[in-house]
Image (cartoon, rainbow, N blue to C red; front, side, top):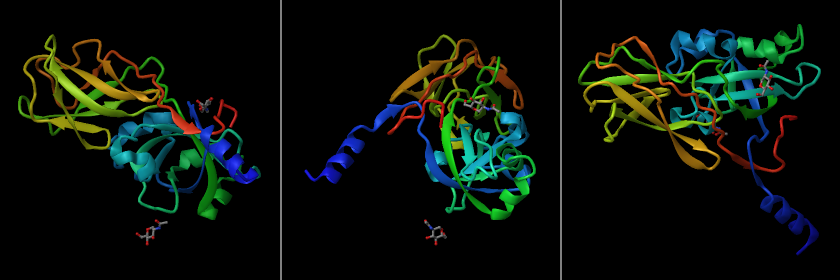
Length: 259
Ligand SMILES: *[C@@H]1O[C@H](CO)[C@@H](O)[C@H](O)[C@H]1NC(C)=O
Ligand SMILES: *[C@@H]1O[C@H](CO)[C@@H](O)[C@H](O)[C@H]1NC(C)=O
């Protein structure tokens, strides 16, 4: 093999399973926070509490038809004159339809990313080169919760939204069952972080959530009766669990927290 081909082969075959990879991309900005909270994930005003209101919208590779909602990323721009080396930690709350960038960032994220007084200069550039990595979402002392959405109607229709989704992974399936029963009914993703079913088991309800842990799927069972018999629309119910799993990516070299 020619040396170049050999080197390429070495690089490709050494792409390893990593907790974090650093990706090169581009980002643009919106001034209004509302633009991202009212977004495709459906978090509404709750989004303001995510990462201090550092919100982002993203296109299909990261939005993943809604599975990416609630994911957390650390993003920094690549011009050290304008941006800090730590950048901003953001939560994905919206879909980005602009195919020129992977991220649309809200104003708070821009402020976090910029050196003092530089935010305006970055904003004026329109699109900037960035690098980003997936980071775990951490909600101190806060379990994964489900909010029963207003369009729910007992006993015919149940629509829930996922709140405080920790870890560095996605919820890709949700099942619901009567407490104590082993008959699980799968829910469907309605959009973003919102799931529903019109086949609701009787009685008090519990849930299990499928996430990627490492490279494999893993069910996480709620540790308690999540919804009481007489669940109510508009209420938020605790699942008793925190998700801390990490879905691995492949890249070389891995990032070990140093960028
Ligand atoms: C952003 O996330 C990184 C990685 O999890 C963490 O080390 C850092 O402290 C976070 N920064 C802020 C301001 O929370
Ligand atoms: C981005 O979207 C526009 C309009 O839909 C399309 O014309 C263009 O080819 C797309 N560019 C890329 C890189 O996909």
